[in-house]
Image (cartoon, rainbow, N blue to C red; front, side, top):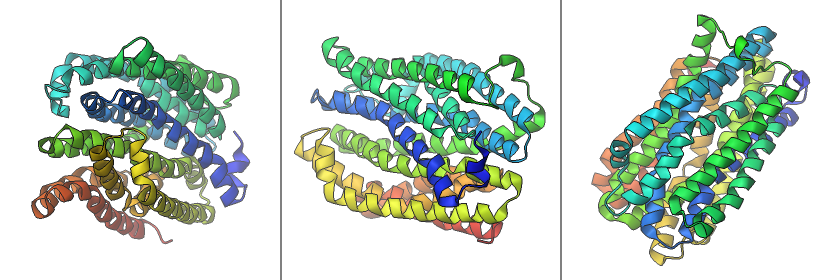
Length: 439
């Protein structure tokens, strides 16, 4: 591990060195799903696009479950490395890899056994059920590879190997882009072909990530014999991993809840939201990448007790998030119709999707600050504030806004609910920040 990155390199340089590859990697990871939507949208079939969009919460669910060991394990390892406990870090890394694989197989079995019930819960109708189920099947079968991909990438970053993690993810994305048109249009597999391409690309990326750990990592271990950890180490993983998982789980909940609110307004509204949310997710993942990219830096300096450097990192992290958010707001407000039209040329979808995208983006500066606070609490092992923020923004606060605003504003209340929930979450995050730190 390049320890000087975490402890000696100037804060701004160290921040971008560890965070920029994470930003690229996270954006590319969304491309797996975004490319599917783009190629499927080329068919011009609104029901097919809506069917695939309805499965978006499952993709988010898999990422959320992987975060238990991905973020929980990586933050624990960062603190251990900061405290110079390399042997413990080795055991934690091995446990996270094999624990994730066993857990992911169980997830696959559950998804397959309850597929019809889950699809109905997602809001699949007679018009969209066939398309949604074919995409869902392959997404479920590929669950172990999707989840392992998230964990391996997070583990690599704890040793400063962010660039390696990024390249492994990018190669997988390139494979996905190549396979998508072949499976969808040449082999006429439709939604199933898009999902199959994603699974294959994840498998290739997993192989490359495992190879990087074996050949380049000095502390991380892929040896199953070293996967034994004690109760205290398991507690360190779960107490941060579960709140981190809930953050992404709430993303699935947010999509599900908003989709169901839009069902009475028609298939076009759901398709528009699916496209708008995926474009929004590109912007959000850049911001998430900066926040999560800085997490090993925060965890290491917290573990080593370097409070002055830690505070400098936090302040710079907030500045980067807010500036990035403002840039995205201007870009999406100006170019929203052109962005949506890349996916579908229907005037109704372009108009509706543009409005939805702008409403989703307006509160992004607040989201940036919330992300910094959340990752800070995770890196420092402060489970309670991390948990509250995890279930708030796209969970409890969103549900409350969706219950109240549509009654006051109708349809507009639905698409403004996430922005309102972001503002409430920001207030809560700042209260926790003031109470736990003196910045």
